Amino acid sequence: MSKTPVSSLGEFGLIEQIKTWVPLQDSDVLKAIGDDAAVFHPAAGAEQLISTDCLVEGIHFDLTFQSMKHLGYKTVAVNVSDILAMNGTPQYLTLALALPQKISVELLQEFYEGVHLACREYHVVVIGGDLSASSANLFISVTVTGYAEKNDLVYRSGAKPGDLIVVTGNPGRSYAGLRVLLREKEFYLSDPDNFAPTLDRHSWCIERHIAPRLRTGVLTWLKQAGIRPTAMIDLSDGLAGDLFHICHQSGTGAVLEELSIPVTREIRELADQFDEEAVRWALFGGEDYELLMTVSPEHRTVIEEYEELSIIGAITSEPDSLLLEEAEGTRTEIEKQGWNHFT
Image 1 (cartoon, rainbow, N blue to C red):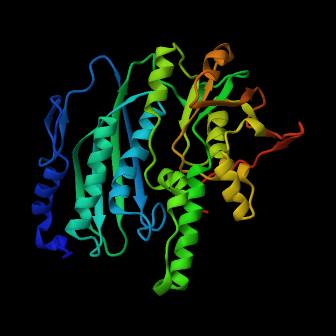
Image 2 (cartoon, one colour):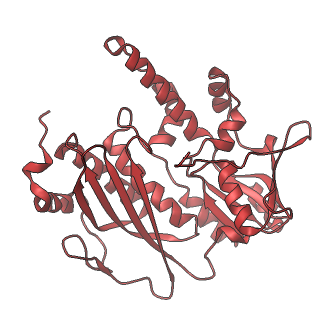
């Protein structure tokens, strides 16, 4: 397939092309891509939410095994996740790219196909952004807006002693996918002429890493059940690190029950292959983009009925104390670590 250099379109030609890749479909937007700023009606009677993230090639993603379409999807999903973690509804998105010469028009179209797919799934509209050249790697900056009724908003700072610690999905699954992809990359680099990837049997974890699906249905179910979490965060830095964020901002501590953490058989078997502990993958792996929340204990019975939610511990009154209750009942301190960009 021939590749069209971005320079052949120029900045404004590329902007016109992008407008066709992410068509506008929102009556509340008065002006979108093409002017100095986007103009839209805020949600009537609701609190406005806004969040910004950047994704840097070589730090957040590796184009050796991350397709541009998957990258586009993940770019939207990881930012929408921040709005969901506030118990909000995502609405609009702006996207800034710094493009190296290796990114052709065709690759960029694949990226925007992924962006458009995620935007349709999470009911988000792209209304603007920026373009720049890059002398080295691909750089992506995303800003997403959303809204929530004042009484629906959930912060990290609301956890109370006795609250249940609840998580969606299976923490550690994304990290399992990353370990498989890095292992396959090593095999490729050591013998590229004879490389034959064996990824199909690991699709359960690879998909979680390269294109995480968000748990929007959980928030809908909680609202219908009359349950408002007391605190919430999305799992980007790892279960331990993100729980510590909640505890630190709430002035509380926490005890996690090792046997209650929903580590699947597949994660355990894969961790064994790497001679590592599956529970550490769940605690410190990161990039799961599941929801971690605290809930009043009065809702225990209802929470236990919903299969996507797992009760994994309880909030304590000891500030910044993070403990793991192991299978035999022993409690040990959990390292207060997560992903840190500057270490």
